[in-house]
Amino acid sequence: MRFRLTPRETSFYDMFAASADNIVTGSKLLMELLGADPSARAEIAERMRAAEHAGDDATHAIFHQLNSSFITPFDREDIYSLASSLDDIMDFMEEAVDLVVLYNIEELPKGVEQQIEVLARAAELTAEAMPHLRTMENLTEYWIEVNRLENQADQIHRKLLAHLFNGKYDAIEVLKLKQVVDVLEEAADAFEHVANTVETIAVKES
Image 1 (tube, one colour):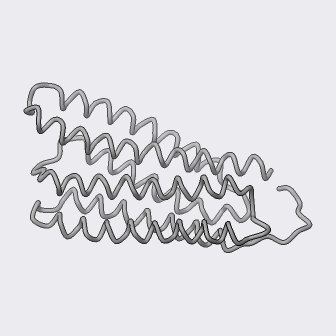
Image 2 (image 1 turned 30 degrees about the horizontal axis):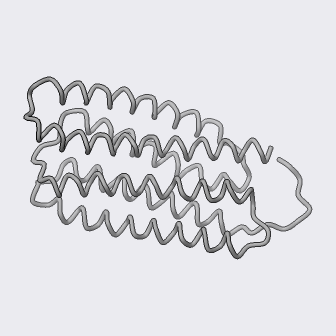
């Protein structure tokens, strides 16, 4: 790690960890949605909305700290990029849950559970990785695994699209379900963006 003679603002590490922990909460709500009766989904959506608002607050706190800090633990643009990408994940997960409720989707297609399992695993890995930003150690396996998970998510997404277009569903249902699976795919992409940003930071700091 590069040796520094100047002190650094360390509260960013705690805020990134809190943001990632909130994403784990969101991923658990996604898992809960899978097994929930349709009548219970609105309440899950409310809790997801509250988690998303907590994520927004965490992101704004990071931006405020960034704007008020003379010395930062790593490059300002990387702090901004990491905070924004973490916020994107939560936004996409909340959007997916909201769409299921708004569209009155009775049954999600087979394969969505695999998408959500990938997101849950990526959330766990991201939460485990954030504390390591303090030392920039033991992060390589994290970004390699998240990139692998994103590739897996791509394959699941393509299979889901093929399933939706196989003629089993009517056109309106296809449009509804496709929007949900597309947003879940965007969440997987956002996890990869976080991992790529962490890799960039680690390389700069090495």
